[in-house]
Length: 248
Image (cartoon, rainbow, N blue to C red; front, side, top):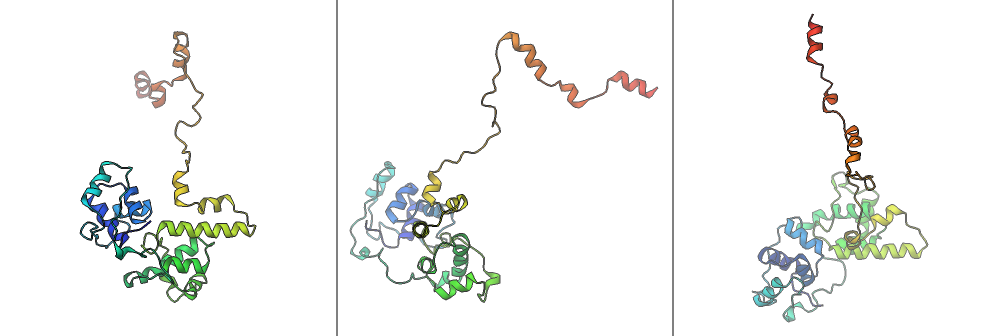
């Protein structure tokens, strides 16, 4: 599928200027749904100026209006020769100068939360070198005391889909070698889509009361009254006569 040029900047513009759903923007720009939601929440693509796809001949206003009226519709990209091969990339990822200072934080996060990833995979995700990764693994990096672990997706250094794909590949390699994953590892290595699709049952205050019933017959009324506590007994207040006797 052809993608628009400057995908993240285009997503910023669509979020700010249209009523398209996160899914529609994500499908059009090639981003993950959570990345688009992060853009709307101001947590992703901070400081990126929106790139108008209408002015840049990638979309028409009629196409945007059509998809706004139908949440299930998908935006159709206008043919643009400049977008050919935009999604193809060879060699290490290029990291902008403004984000290079955040690279150690992203590496530290990947090393801590995804130790199954190889140095080569981390290098492709955040555009770094293997010696830098090894120095952070060994805690011999010159600035290790000041490095904080930050999600590379939140830093805008990789996409959630790319991270999920790298983790899935590492898990497949681990399974191929005969390593058995523990329950904690399975939960930690679950992709974002799997995590969102799973239905985790949350206990409530009504837990254990499924089979508890009250009969509405008049004969059971005295039993219900016995079961209810006496309001005065809760406070255990002395009678006025007892107070007078104590004064004497």
